[in-house]
Image (cartoon, rainbow, N blue to C red):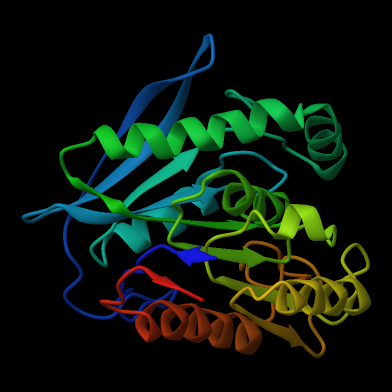
Length: 255
């Protein structure tokens, strides 16, 4: 397959190092099919064009935690687009989140992500050849969907998101994949993660997977005190950094 050029990610953690770039943010709108949808864009100060990342929220919706992750990445030199798959709705409790997630049309969500990538390519601040995706929880699954449906996506990070194992679907992936999961995740058990990893490797895809002992779902989200695992979250970010830096400056190639 052809792997798009990957871009580098400067060292990043939840606690930002000194000297991050100033970040501007605003609400933007883009066209998705016949609809006009909104998103939050974060743009680093300085001379572009910059690599860009589609940031995909958890099952709660586009809330403050997701925006903080998008802003933090932008402070490291990325244009980040935090998409709003729920079209303005944000859950205040797990029951509402479950209803919103269950009611989200998958085809519409995928269309919104594909349209988000096309929108980013029109931005003068963005290098259109350097686009990636990252998501957590529900957003992790949709980050994989971005890789399945955006052929020129350069990199994809899946944080405890829903997976696929169908060989025909996996053949559509053109970007390297980084997967981060918890061993105690009841919704995405280690067996399904290893099955996905094995299917991807069999198809010749570039993939790296880590399953953290003692961690469950949402282990990277510090606002969820019951699920957050500081050590695992820190290591997950270090692996995200290494994943991007490993392919820094890499040109398109056949693998």
